[in-house]
Length: 221
Ligand code: DX5
Ligand code: ZN
Image (cartoon, rainbow, N blue to C red; front, side, top):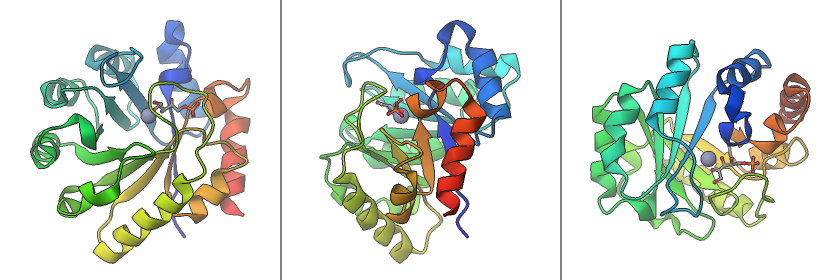
């Protein structure tokens, strides 16, 4: 049986009460906290950086923090996130001029490393770096905003990546991000994902536990 990870995106959390909201979502059964870093340059939106990650650690959050960098350039802020207590970092293939170097930099800082693919980004970037990857994140919306609809062609892409991971024999997480909800999560899992980011479908609901339970029930069917 696959172990599925549910990773609520704090992009949809209450920023004025971030510590409490993250505590609440963890108590509701979240496995990982997904941390969307946007720079108003690589993507047309601006969010938060390493000091907020540090603030969550200082507040007492011990759960794994999954940093999704939507920034360009990438390398400069990787050491900052390592220092701030991040556990894993993913970055967009197009945002780094030296993908192998960026992956190595993340690993040299003791974190798990992964590549992100936008809906239309081809998978050939994977060709020579599979041995350096701990995770692969497929965007199922165009990055920049929460609350968008899942792009259906991502299901085929998931199947392609799942086949590559299985053929590699390596232990690589396949993360999906964008438009994930209780009513499509089972189909997404069947296509090969084993780590599910959900922003609006969890933080946008009045009862986080009910929202996460509904996803786990769908995953179990
Ligand atoms: C979009 C972000 C996502 C986003 C997902 O650029 O990477 O993590 O918060 O939000 P929902 O789940 O609302 O589509
Ligand atoms: Zn994300």
